[in-house]
Length: 184
Image (cartoon, rainbow, N blue to C red; front, side, top):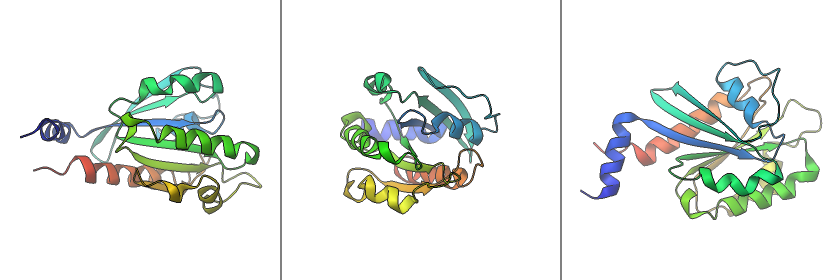
């Protein structure tokens, strides 16, 4: 039995999943995490480091790392890559002027060796705002079809209303568990 098999069996028993939530500043990362956890979302300030939440969902222990997205903090993202099972990339669908920056950051991130194999969920957030681009438009702008190194899906959502957060997280967990928790 190889080391990977042993580690996979250990993970299977624990059903523990590490999820990293990244995106540009003001995309709604912390709001998504708080809304998903049923917390108040009316007093959120920019994340100047990271937030960690451990939640139980569908029989999994989710260790969710929400890391600040300000330009000055992005060089520190690599400190959080180790043992990441799933990556949630949050996009502000109403911030059209920063979508090229968003695309560049995402594609650079996906080249990181320690993120290889991580499942990617792109949340096209802020769909409740007027003028927000659709998930299909975001998919094209971010050139998601070019991503061949990761399983990925884009899901439209609103962190404020909570719409589609659950279906996105459920897809992420299903994809991760199909990869990791498969041994008998």
